[in-house]
Amino acid sequence: MKNSAWSLFALFVFCLTACGPDYAFQEVKKIPDSGSWAYADTLNFNFTITDTVSRYNFYLDFEHSDTFPAQNIYLKLSTRFPDGHRLTRVRSFEFFNVQGGTLGTCSGHDCDLRSTLQENAYFKQTGEYILTVEQNTRLDHLTGIKSVGLILEKVPRKK
Image 1: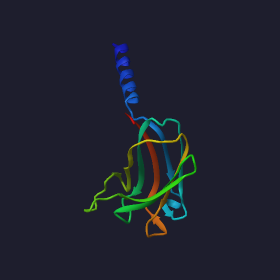
Image 2 (image 1 turned 135 degrees about the vertical axis):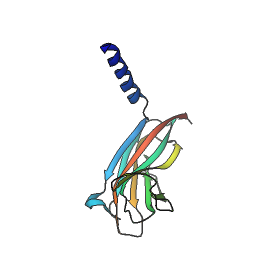
Image 3 (image 1 turned 90 degrees about the vertical axis):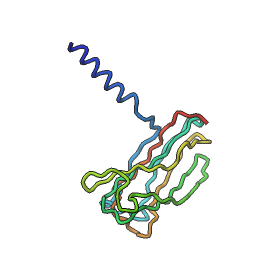
Image 4 (image 1 turned 30 degrees about the horizontal axis):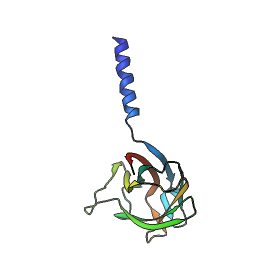
């Protein structure tokens, strides 16, 4: 009886670890100065791509306070490619709906939100990429953001 219980437990643990997402990259950057994000505080995510056949989903994970002073955040996102080419764009990410309810999950005064940056992307070049994230709001010092994370999830589809 003991052996079958341990076998069942081992199978359960194996299933939990084997069925998770396939992250090619995952990193979280803490915002310095107790969550006051200045224009000058850039976040750089460096990652290397060796597979130009697979597709990836990009996510940004935000940890913020439930008293964040706006419905959304504007970010300036710059990608430096291995060949030195650079692409920059500004994007808005919603934290709250129009009624003021959070779009993430909150515990106490801390909220977590995963936002899709891009789905089914592929890379034309192998090598090192750098994604630079800058806050691009009207406030020089934006309060309420505790961390920003980048996740690259490999998806099973091929290009």
